[in-house]
Structure formats: C-alpha cells, structure tokens
Image (cartoon, rainbow, N blue to C red; front, top):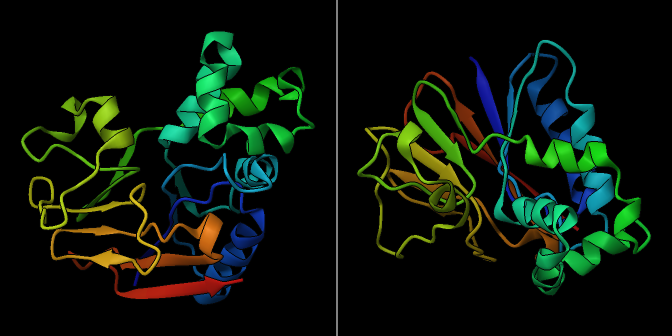
Length: 218
C-alpha cells in the first residue's frame, strides 16, 4: 500500500514539524511514501527560519515530496523584495518571522526567499488535488487563479471537489478540526496557536479523504 502524508499550516512551529516528521517516519516503517506540505511555513509562530531550513533539507530518497506555497509565504517574498509591502506583511504575522532571522530584513538569506517563491501552487495525484486554500470547482486545475489557490475560503456547507477528485487543503482555521467532508478536507487546526497539528494519511489507491489521522499535541 502506497501512502501520502499531508502536513497542514505550520506558521513557524518547527517543534511541531520535527515531531510530525518523526511520527511520519515511524508510521511509514521504512517504506517510501509521499510527503505533501500545504504551505504557510512562516509568520505568527516563533521559528519560521527553522521550518524553512528543515523543509529545504527534504526527505531521503526515494520519497516524493511536494511543498506547496501558502499565502503567508507569498506575503513574505513580496515584502522582502519590495519594501512597499513590508508593513502589510509585518501586520499579518511577519514580525514573528522576521524576528526568527534576528529582526533585520537584510539578514534573511536569498536562498530562503527563493525557496519560498519557488513553491508550486498545487500537487495532484490519481485521486486527489492538494492546495493551500481551495479551488474553483468550475475550472480545470491548471486554469485556476493563483489568488484562489492561495486565499479561498469555502462556505461551511461547500463540499465541492474538483473534477471528481477530493480536494485537500488548509488555510481556514478550525481549531477543533480537521474538517472532513465527502469531497474535500481542511486539515488546518491553527497549530501555531493551539499546539495541535493533525497529519492526514491518504491511501494512494483509494479515492476520498484520509484513511487515518496522526495527531500531535504540545
């Protein structure tokens, strides 16, 4: 059985990331699998720099890895490339991210900025679409607007997938989540604030939502 492990919004919680990767490694028990991380690596929490460093290191071969861009990752890139965007980023949690680099924008390494900017906006497999925030169900995946993929918020009763595939996303905080519906699931439990991170475990051969959940609490 081939598995995909999905980590939602981390927002600077490198402590939760370290535990998540250890739990995933133990669960996989030596088998290669796929790791998908749903973006928002930075802002709000205390160690954005540490999260980026760990994720940039990747996973051992032959794991497949997809690390998707979140809206906060895009905000950080924009602010560090154009000072006009700095105040907006800082007001949305960028102050915490900047503090993890010592407080000086000039001290943020170019390779971290380039890595964030280079994250894809989605990942797709046989049965599922993985994005940070959501999709427009009326459009094919490759015609989706970046702003939708990065910032969409679903209505509570919206159970739309995409072209018959289950949509896996984060972005919209549900501290008592995850939110599991027939055609989409939202794994974001506001882990940076709650200390509770939930990893979705998906069977690559079976359509639909997670076959299992791995919960980490600090």
